[in-house]
Image (cartoon, rainbow, N blue to C red; front, side, top):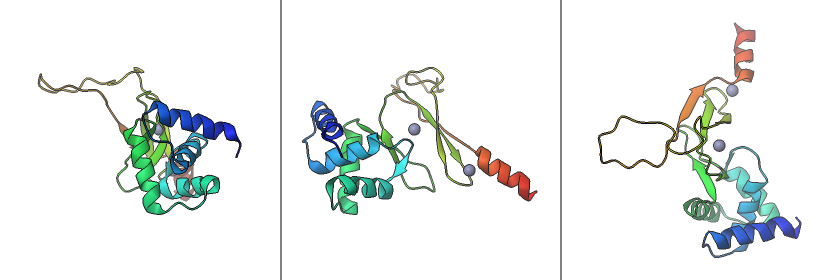
Length: 148
Ligand SMILES: [Zn+2]
Ligand SMILES: [Zn+2]
């Protein structure tokens, strides 16, 4: 682990108004260096390689603090553990494969939140639309065809 990613993580924590701790720096770095959407167990493994021992409870505490500070995006998908990724504020959505649980980003069609106009009575303020598209990924579709 070089100094640079950790220094970058420290300044991002400071900018977000968070106290800089070794655990938070390690987790932010682990998420930043992991493409895709990882669960807490996987991130705990990666963060531990940077900072040493990290309990599961500490992992969840750190992830919650980073999410609340707007540095990390948490995606809750029914039937799956929560997944975490760097918050890019791009209002992207997610495709989830029903068979293997793989998650793929789906770009926001408009590029800014909220990208849909829901039918709500006047008086509701909307700042975000999080959509989950469900279906079957190409690998699973190919496997289905082989069985059929
Ligand atoms: Zn699949
Ligand atoms: Zn995503």
